[in-house]
Image (cartoon, rainbow, N blue to C red; front, top):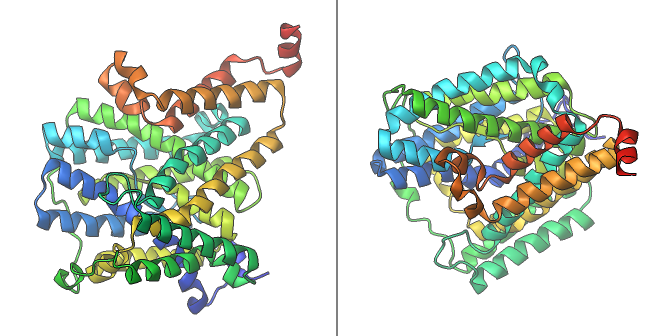
Length: 436
């Protein structure tokens, strides 16, 4: 078996580079999009915005390296790719617009330390998340990503050409090439099916005039990251609100870590891996706050890619992390990668997102299809996916509840699954007898 399919195998750099690049291309646009949206919503100066985009690439690379090669108990030693989280975006816009970016960064720093401590003390709460709860959260992550993949396929939500014939053509070509390579490719080519599809789709988009290279020449060749572009300010209300979202981010990281172990490593996740993964999520997010970035988290699309390609080698994924850091230090590299159209990314991600859903089915099968497990999984998914598809249901609740739950199906599914696991009798026979 090739070393790229081994967690600690020795892989030549020339072989590792394309697989690392594949991971970065899968998440690159998603990584910089939250900070772009935040900067535009708050009205941050374009020069500072460019520095923030640069910083978020460097932070994502550092976070990924820490997950791969832990520092003490921070990092899971697993092929987890980290990036700027969308989960915090709506609250970040509210805080930054009303209290300033300094207040937001102060809350990010303190909240990250809280999540870091949560990960380091995992033995005190890990029993609340048995395998059936983890499997249900993984399913929720997979299902919640499907609309994102579909929107990207059509050109990106809000794009003026959303659903255009050009987006349909390029997205279909990209998806078809990924699928053909995955089915008929041999050995390493099959594992690079996403990269092959992305390259072909990108060339197709260029030929159709969908790629704009104008901004590349405006980028400086080298640029160092800006430390503390905003002076942190600490306000209790903002800190408490951000901490609540950190708990949601932690549930996503737990689900991603569980899905990675089940789908790509073909084993159950270990308790210390969950704790170390969450600790990395929090501590590196605090560092992100020092560089003016919103928190990072594990990227589900990369979990899907690892599950699909079976490439789990740490050194290989680390080359991708180094590419991310270089994108931050050498802005023209990042500018080129950012020209990839959304429809190309959508064509690539549909397969990956579906593989996360499939991995959750395998996790549930290992848990067993008992009456108790059926209730936990089915009711949690029904409430989480159903209620958040009609977010106006939450309008009677306080604003903080709306911010955390109204459009975050993963958070609702996790809360329901944990509560059902605590409430339902542990003895499945007792539940069946009660039904009789």
